[in-house]
Length: 62
Image 1 (cartoon, rainbow, N blue to C red):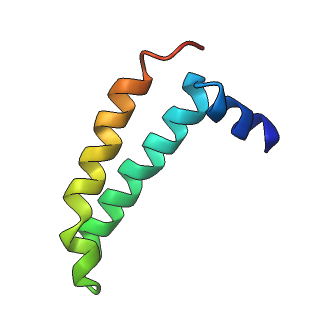
Image 2: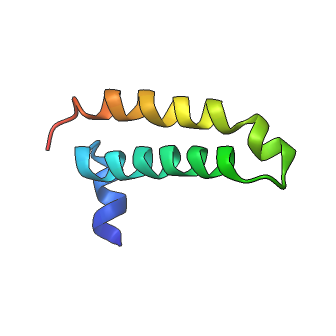
């Protein structure tokens, strides 16, 4: 786990892509659930932030 956090601090591609992928998945989950209105409301922006973040971090060094 310390490798993960040191990778985040060193701006390595792998850990940041994992965070972006989790954000995208969270946004899709928020979009598909029918119970919590605020989660549905913020699902698009969460997915968008994850997608833009993934595009940006894909240019980071290995």
